Each structure stands twice: as structure tokens, then as C-alpha cells.
Image (spheres, rainbow, N blue to C red):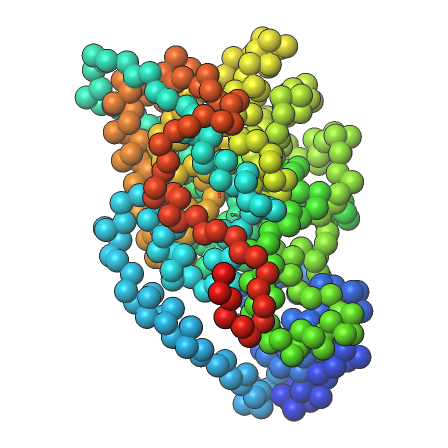
Length: 509
Ligand SMILES: Cc1cc2nc3c(=O)[nH]c(=O)nc-3n(C[C@H](O)[C@H](O)[C@H](O)COP(=O)(O)O)c2cc1C
């Protein structure tokens, strides 16, 4: 390793080609030529920064230790002499100026009344690339909308004349206290939305006594997020399983040592879903002349943030299967939960294997389009596991979690009444910190808390344990044809997908 060697900016600048490509990240010089040779889909982006400082592009989509763990030590060339580095001039476009003005016109936080509001503000103020990555979903985005719509097929049967002077929204998730049956689910690339990335979630979770699930692909490093937790603060880890099991083993055992209380293994992503909003954004952000040059050389274009992160590290193992679970049991004592279960047969298998639970989830509609919503799957899972194994839910020994489309505490209450232990929420917290940092996430949690307590009172439930199946009518849950009043706040935030457009011609469509 040449860690201490000083290299001039001029020297780095000479290595600006496919055959020899050096880049600077956080003042350090790396030889990344072999990343290009590997046919990595992010090659084009890397080449754009060949011989230059790539920190700004690199930071939001990689944890700080990504390059040190993925590049052999001999490719760490040394430190750049700061005074010799030519600053890459970032051109502030008119659109960016307009965006910055919109940012300065955000309403104060106390005018944000519900989780939809965060999405509305984020949509207008986030950099387009980040908005595209966070909001996009698979194919025609039917499942992502169905995730929310499914809750509209469940109606309440409140109890009256219950003394609800005091209501208690607290509960236990995998045996750990949570101020309400909600956890912050794992969402990658936090720094695309805010420079502090997932740290915003760690801080707000601590203040509100809820649990954060750390993603494998966080923009902050795993240790940074664990170090930021308060003493006693509970965190879970979401795991993408690496083809190289020794890397997974190291990560899992390190997480266990650092006090992670539950391992959520993602099982719905053997391949990345096709997220066209994100892909289209990438095309439109490119200089057309560069695109055609790249096309004629047959270079695969970079396809949005999602593909950029998975491509260079196409490490997620599509071969992962049921037999691997015994191995997981042998390497850790943490409770194991499968994230992304979508039918009762698989939930039953997980139970029979002695796992701690399952998350009924379709990854926020980002993987298989026309996958059913988690809450619909919940109804069949509780029914069949009762029939086949005599289980009732919620069940301490086999916990059911649901995520996708949850935007109101009434959504949470419906899932809990139907047998879920807790509900995961993803995008609303991303939008909250993208617009307002960790204070935004705190506000989002406070809103959920207030909504939760109010609705418990209105339902005649004094505690989470009172939320039982008789409090809801889910008889229409499996019908996908029920007319209900539409949710205007949600619908107006939903940004329609677009067709391909001619370049340099204002479409009249
Ligand atoms: C931007 C974004 C990134 C995500 N990244 C991951 C991930 O890295 N691993 C994972 O298992 N799930 C990931 N998810 C899925 C979430 O954990 C969760 O299933 C989903 O967001 C729930 O839907 P909601 O966003 O409507 O609340 C991601 C979701 C979003 C929106």
C-alpha cells in the first residue's frame, strides 16, 4: 500500500483514459482501471471523472468504505497534493437555480400535517436524480400504487363506550420496546436525498423510540450508523446476500458483535427490478453527443442510480435458496427474518425452519410488478398458518411484518388488527429527511404517533393488544375491483410515468 505517498494533481490528470484510469476521492488517489475492465455498467460515469476528483459524484451512492473494501491495497496510490488539484467546475444550471429557490420556499415544518405533505415537498425540491431513484418502482408501477390502494379495501368496525382516557401505543418488536408498532425499513442511498443520509433516521429513531433497519447499501458506513445510535438504541440489519459467502459471514458476525438485534434477509431481489423513471432520468441527464459516442462504441449506458449501485457490485446472489438458511443459523444467533415473502406457502416454510418471522413485502413495488400488497398477503398468511399449524397472530415466536404503501396510522392499525406485529415505512422517511433533515423525520414520527393515538381512541382500543381482527372488515381485500373514494393527496403526489421523447424537440404530447 502507498497510503502516505504524495501525488500531484497533474500526475493524476494524465491517467484519464480507459487504459489507465485514476480518480481522486476524499483526497486519496485510486487506480480504478480494473473496474472498467470488469465491464461494470458504471464505467461511463467513472470515465467521466478519469484523472479528476470524483468525490461529489461518488459520495451519495457509496458508503465511505466501499472503495477501500473493493479495491486491492496496491491500487490505493496515495494522497493527492491538494493545491495541485484542478477543481471540477460544477455548472449551476437554470433548473438547479430554480430548484434552490423552491428549497428556500419550503413551508415551515409545523405546516406539514401528514406524510403525504413530505412527498409533495420532496417532489418539488429534491434533485431530479434523487427523486427518480426514491420514487421509482418496477415496470408500469402498478404494484407500488396497489400497495397504498389495498388499505382502502379495509374498513373499520369501531367499539364504542370504551374508556379511552389513556391509550398506550407502545409494543414489542422481536422482544424490543418500540413506542409504536412502526419501524423504519431499509432504504438504500440516503445521501442522494441529504448529505447526512441514513444518520437522519438513526437520530430521529432514537428520539422517538422506534427501531431503524440499516440497509446493506446505505450511503453511510454500517459502523457510522451503529456509532451514532444512543446507548440501548435498537437497530436491525437488512442483508443482501453476497455471492462470496465469506463477505456475508464477516458482515453478519460483525453486525452481531456490534449489537444488531435482528437480521432481515432480503429474498425478493435475485435481480434488480426495472425502474424506468430512474433509468429515463439517467438518459435525460446525459449529454446527447456523449451518449451517441458511447453507443457507437457499444458501451452499456449507465442506467440510473439503482443500476449504478448494483452493477459495479453485482454481488447479490441469485442462487440464494432455502438450503442456505441452515448456514445462516450456523453463523449467527441473531433472529433471522425473511424480507420479501409474498405467499403463505413460503411463510409456512419459514416457520417450519424455525425462523423468527417474515416481512410480507414487495420491496415497495420496486421488484416484481403485479406482486400483491403486503397487507393482502397478511390476510392469507394468518388464515393458512392457523389452518395448517394452529398459529394465532400476533405471535411472539413467529412475527409477521408488513411494508409498502403505509402513509397513515390508520394503515398501520389495519395491519396490526389483522395480525402483524409491526409495519415498516420506507419512502415517507426518505422524503422527510430529503426536505427537512432529521427534524423532518422527527416530525413524521410525531405525526404518526398523534394519528395513532387519536385513531386508537376512535376505535375503542386502549392498547396495541386491543387491535384485533374484529375491528376491521377486510372481506374485500382479495378483490382488485372494488370502487372506493380516491385518496386525493396521495394521487396528486403520484408522478405519472412518461414515454420516450424526441431529443431536443419540445414534445407536443
Ligand atoms: C429508495 C428505496 C431504496 C430501497 N432499498 C432497499 C434495500 O436496499 N434493501 C431492501 O431490502 N429494501 C429496499 N427498499 C424497500 C424497502 O425496504 C421497503 O420494502 C419499501 O420501501 C416499503 O414501501 P414504502 O416505501 O411504500 O414504505 C427500498 C425502497 C426504496 C423506496
